[in-house]
Length: 149
Image (cartoon, rainbow, N blue to C red):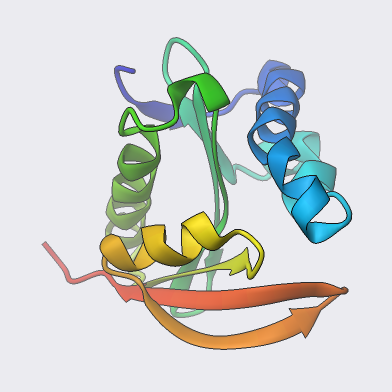
């Protein structure tokens, strides 16, 4: 992985396939496909919200600017690349983007059944803020302050 770049329209199918592969093992736990598996990646790419690893597509992050924060809508890593630092690099990139956009905070949520994430995000400085059920999903919300450079 040499860097993280904006996804291009022609990346939509590959992004969708990577996300589906990354989240497939959660389907039995949740009882249905997690929200990222059903997202419209062509529209998200057209809006400039999707970023991918440069070169080999092994990671995807969806970042949506909001008032006062940057929403990390999805982080997906190719199952073959898990444990290689791709996820950490994507989250570090999100912090850089938040600073560049003048957003002092990152926010994200994960499904309560994705217990690996419940430990992963706090190790990267995210603090749990609350839990809620939305659209039938049991979500755990996190935030992280992004201090200026």
